[in-house]
Image (cartoon, rainbow, N blue to C red):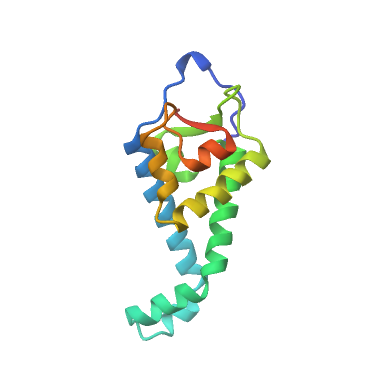
Length: 148
């Protein structure tokens, strides 16, 4: 993977809701697997009962949110896309000049994305009603998601 700085604006096309959803699922599965690896000692000692595993995951809630924040911020800032977005061939850019996303905007986008997830994913539904298919976190960070 290489950091992308050159963007051909003549080829910009908004990412579809389907691609965005696919990337979201891939990223969430990845975060879940990483979380389970980190917590494996506790999970393996839990007798394999689902309720015990859920209690362990709940006890690490803050750490998992921090992991999501770091993951989303770093990948959007450095690569313009998370691993899920890279797989489905979409990326995040600034809406005003179509440039790569800077660190502060990436951090803002990531934090507000977590907030949207926490409130029944309401911020995501905004993308169905905005011209640029922008979610709440896209609006706050002034970003667009486009095909790569």
